[in-house]
Amino acid sequence: MFTRRSANRRHLVAERSSPSFVGKRPGLQRPTAFIFPAAGAVLAIVAFPTAYAVFLSLTDNNLISPVQHFIGLGQYRAALADPIFARSVINTFALATIALNLELLIGLGLAQLITSRVRTRSAWQALLMVPLMVPPVLAGYQFKWIFNPDVGVVNDALYSLTGSVHSINWLVDVPLGWISILVAELWIGIPFVTIVLIAGMLSISPEYLQAAEVDGANGWQRFRYVTLPLIGPFIWIAMALRSLDVGRLYDIVRIMTGGGPAHRTETLWTYIGQEATFDGAIGYAAAMSVMVSALSVAFSLLIFVNLFRARAAKA
Image (cartoon, rainbow, N blue to C red):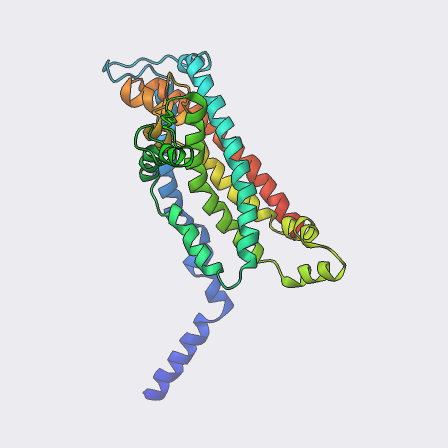
């Protein structure tokens, strides 16, 4: 009996390990079944709210009136004719352009400097993580206190340097308000960009740099013709993520300036939030959010196309 059971067990193991049995396994026969949970989560979290926002944008939904009517593209036409919405678009793109370029330039310099410091590299990387752990809301209050005209650190520093009282309204005057917001955004963004670029520089094989040095290239030439092309994918990844963060900037602007004075420091999402929460124009805010989301998707696709091209060039 024992011999028969052993023979049956060996026969069963051989049958299960045969190619014909492997092909009959339901899991291997339908590998797409593993996609269904993730697809369901995407539909529940992304697709349904997006579809509902599009529906609201086609109505005159308002918190004041419980009755809503279908008005088609009326909210979109109103948004395109809204001068405050146009100003918020210009402000957001201007802030994103200046912030992203400064973050890239400063991040490249810091990454190159920290990468060359082998002994203290870990300490600098740990220090760069500190701004990333601060919530944007807390950062907004922090810089609102720093640029406070009465008890702010900046005006106190100017008083210590010049000996005269400087009551500069950093958060009220238009150019100074944007400078304050830009400083807060750089404080959050530069460490992230620097860490990503450090990872890219550390992934470069030392043989490339050594070969360039043997050929007589100086430090700038090694950086320009060796390091910079090889970290191209990392640059595009950092810029893609940071552009999305700057594009949906809300917390810092809302806390520091509130979009004022007279909507002069208004960004897209602060204006959309103002219309939705304070004015109750849900349909109008939904129309603007759909337009902004479409622009964000198009901009993200452009960045990722350049990312794939950079990866292909590196390969």
